[in-house]
Length: 135
Image (tube, rainbow, N blue to C red; front, side, top):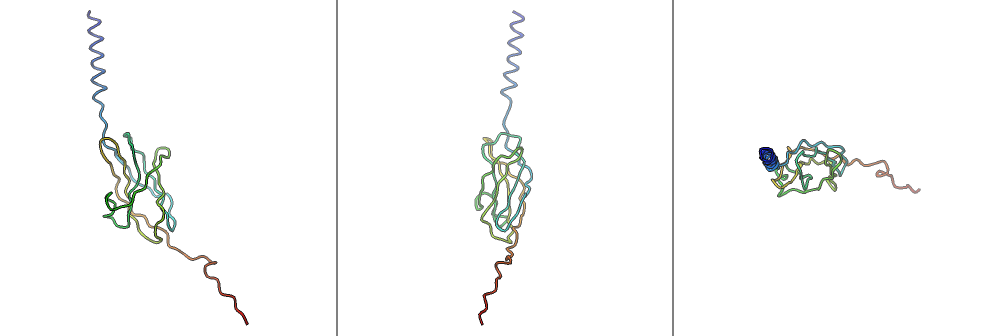
């Protein structure tokens, strides 16, 4: 009888321990820009340690635009221990504000907002051809 009570007691402790595990809201780390062109900014962010269902980046050309309501959104792709995305169709020589997000059952976690600037559009040698001269 004593052995049975001990087993039940241990099983009860294990049940309580398992049921006390709680999921927390995602904690999103710092964004790194990995490549910038005239029309594209590539971003990377550490994958949160919490379970997440969705992740990506909000971006806009104003710091107030990246609140999720007025900004553009691009989904992230898991790449090792990070999630990444390529933000495309941007204007050249323009500063953009970017914020990462991750979503799970407990809510949405955000990174700090960063600024990244696209490269200026510099005409190439072929863009400045002289018209053929006729005599």
